[in-house]
Image (cartoon, rainbow, N blue to C red; front, side):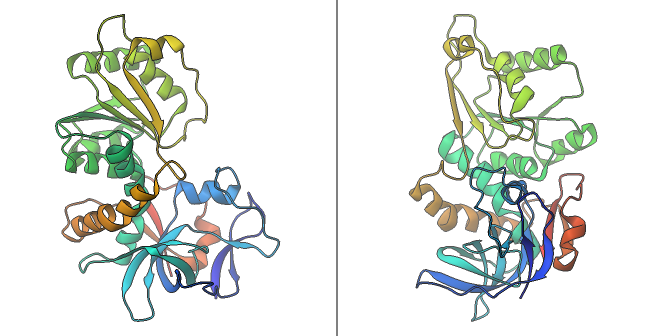
Amino acid sequence: MKAAVIYKKGEMPKYAEFADPIPQNENEILISVKAVAITNLDKAKASGKHYSSENENQNGTVIGSDGVGLLEDGTRVYARGITGTIAEKAIVEKNRMVALPEGINNTTAAAMPNAIAGSAMALRFRAGMRQGETVLINGATGFTGQMAIQLAKHYGAKKIIVTGRNEKTLENLLKLGADEIISFKQDDESILSQLKEIHQNTPIDIILDYLWGHSAELILSALKGNGGFTNKVRYVSIGSISGDTIQLSSGILRSVDLHLSGSGLGSWTREEVKLLFSEILPEMFLLAAQNKLKINIEEVSLIDIEKIWTKDVSDGKRLVVTI
C-alpha cells in the first residue's frame, strides 16, 4: 500500500510503499482510509518531541493517529488508529470507532475529532463546565481554538473571551460566538490591564490554554488575588505552542481559588474516553452534518505529503489528507 512514512524522527515523511497492516486479534479491524487530518499532535509525535512518541523503527513508521475510512461492509467510520493512518489501509480498535451520519463528508469528519477531544474533554471532565459560566480560550485563532469556541457555546457558556495574535482572525471569532477579544500584539502591561478588568467585571470560571508559555504567565498573574475571597478558576492546559515551561509564583496559588490541570493523552480515564466515542463525538458529527458547526478545511493529497508537511495553514484551517 501507499503511505506517509517516517524513517527517522525529525525527518520529513515520505510517500512510500509499505506493507499492508494485518489485524492481530478480535479487537482490531482493518479499514480503507479515505481522509486523515494533520494535527500538531501528529507532527510532534513524528518529530519525537511528544511524550507519546514511539521508538524509531528501522523499517519506517506510518504516521497519523486517526482517520475516516470504510469497513469491509462499506460502513463509513471515524476511528483511532493502532497502526499509522495516513495510508491506504490502517488497523483500528473496534471500541474506538464511530459510525458517521449521512450529511457529513469524509474530510469534515476527519478534521474534527482531535480538536473536539482537546476542548470537550477539558470542558466537561477537567473543568466540569456548568451552563452560564465564563470561559477564556488562550490561543483561539487556530482550528482547535475555533472549535473550542463553538463547543463552549454549545455547552452553555455565558461569555467567551479569546486571545491570539492574528487580529483579523480574532475579529472573525466574534462571528463564531466569542464575546470579547484580547490581542497579544499589545504590550504586556496592556494585556494584563485588559485581563484584570475583564476578570473583575465578569469573573472567569474556566481557562482553556492551547499556548502555555509567556501568555499563561500573564493570565495567571492577572488572576492573582489580594487576600480577599476569589472566584474559583479551573485552568486547563491543552497545548504548549508558545513554550513547554512557565514561571509560576506560589503567591498566585495561595491568593486565588485555582485548580490547575491538563487535558491530553494519558490524563483521561477509561470511562471518559469511552464517553468520547459513545456520546461526545457522535453528537458533534451530527451537529456538523446539520451545518451547526463551522469547519475550515484545506484538502491535500497523500501523494503530496512531502510538500505539504510543513505547510503554514492560515485562518485556522485544518489540513486534511485525502486518500
